[in-house]
Amino acid sequence: MAAHLLLEQGYEVIGMFMKNWHDDSVTISDECPWLEDSNDALLVAEKLGIPFQVIDLSKEYKERIVNYMFKEYKRGRTPNPDILCNREIKFDIFLKAAMKLNADFVATGHYCQKDEIQVSEKKIYRLLSGKDKSKDQSYFLCQLTQNQLSKALFPIGHLQKSEVREIARSQGLVTAEKKDSQGLCFVGKVRLPEFLQQQLKPKKGEVVEISERFNTYTASKVANTLQELSAPFEYHESDGDVIGQHNGAHYYTIGQRKGLNIGGKPKPLFVIGTDINSNVIYTGQGDHHPGLYRKGLFIKNKDIHWVRSDKTLRSGEKTDLIARIRYRQKLQSCTLHMEDIGLYIIFQDNQRGITPGQFAAWYDGEEVLGSGVIQ
Image 1 (cartoon, helix red, strand yellow):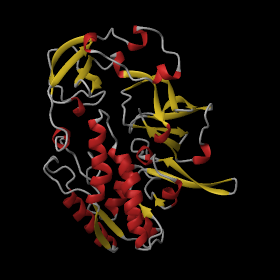
Image 2 (tube, rainbow, N blue to C red):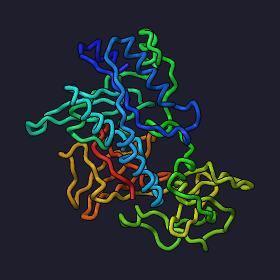
Image 3 (cartoon, rainbow, N blue to C red):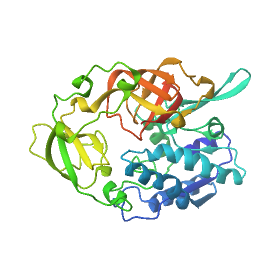
Image 4 (tube, rainbow, N blue to C red):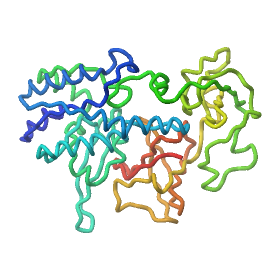
């Protein structure tokens, strides 16, 4: 659809397909196989009458995305490969390949928008939410730079998903009824334990249940400093009861419900903490367990990225904005506090499942101002 709309606007369009994955052993069958996607892209290109070629970026994808994922999981953190793929692959390596073909822009099918404004006689590109709020993908692009945005086009960002499908049907595009893609960016839906076991070996450990009455905030003192409000919970085996075993703490993430395989509890069990060093998983019963909720988070200086560098906060400054810590989460009111050691984001309401390794993205209304990796 992006290609079709650009052709209508008078652009000269080239279709390029990225092949980023070869190992089908860890993908769930028939879920986003790259060969089917490539054939669909070829059929659309033929229908639209545009050139089409395949570019193999599997080596770069493994180096920049997959290896980073293994490294982060090994540290007990949960990375977001889709955000990294946009920053490192689509709008870096793929963009450079397009530029070698004398392309002026790279256009994608993201549900987001951009525009241009002048600030102190300098052109600034703004990354904006997609019109379809249920499909808005601006979060996935929260690590893009001004230079990357200058070369990006998002032709469908002003449309609803239903409109996109309707136009695709009217044009006879083979992908008009294609299911929404899910799973790991350009790999497809994977069995995560099997995927991670390529490098992270299983290791038996204990599952400890923490009582719902246990609340780190009130266990010793009320949290009131930025550091206390944003600090991850700390649990010890003595804080709860051993209720089972797991195959490796690095396979689990905060907020996870599936994969524990422990029943017999009045409420569902959720992961509320992991300890990689002692290989222990901490769990709590029910979606309202206090261990799932925190008031704030912290981002190290090296992990802070401003899409709008002219909006950068200096040490000692703070500002009220809205932010999200995962895709499709409703934007939450918060205050950003810039300190010498990094950025604190303190939310108006407690947030469920703040997870180390994931990205927090902050917005001013519809515009993405910046993002960073949660500690």
